[in-house]
Length: 316
Image (cartoon, rainbow, N blue to C red):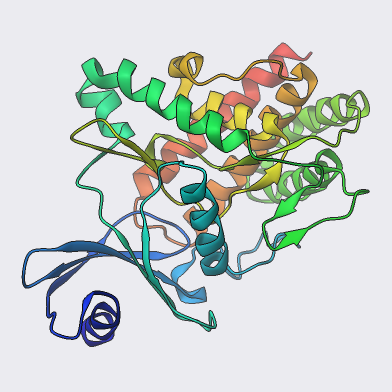
């Protein structure tokens, strides 16, 4: 691995550079991440995409997905678009051509901490940082399209993101019943609520560019309080409420700093339930694949199982 990265560093930074160290960084369920340091002290991040690096490849709950483009390709395309629109994300220095796995990318190292750390350890920085994140989100969401899709794969005008998510949710419910039979009645009850919400949602043709899975762990902050979004492979044009409902779950009380105006409340409720099903089933998949942070996975299972119970009580 060290020799491979040193070769790519020389392509990117000059033939005379030498790799001093390469350290695996924890985090990320679909790619491997490393910190590279050159002899002169320059730091950069290495991303490696390969089927073997993803905890979700060949999973029991595999779902046919219309968003099938290579994660590495989507990282490159999304990075370029975000940089062009002044949205802060680490710069891409180098990407393998051809996207034949394994795919390597060398990316800007942000000398700082993630937002989870700030919220827990440095709350005095929260106000300024969340306002900065809001500005970046607003710029992201101002990128619009009349169709749903990835930058290289726009779907037809008849594609309905609500119907699509409902079908995904049904498969997640089947999987949850299989792995958590004790709570099957809760999942079936909430599935009916989801179906009723879907029936009252009208089609639209105004879609926004969204991160799609933005949580505090996907936000890096440097010493000058600059905010950078990371893990951008899943960014796409979709319903804004998909993003907003996820932000509401992940940021809890701090969501008030990030909330957009003029949201469709039925869509917000629909996507909230969708995310609860999706995150809970995803946590069970990680548990089955022996994800390295078992405590984190068990915490996710407990959180989203309780959220589903509460939603069932609210919707009786």
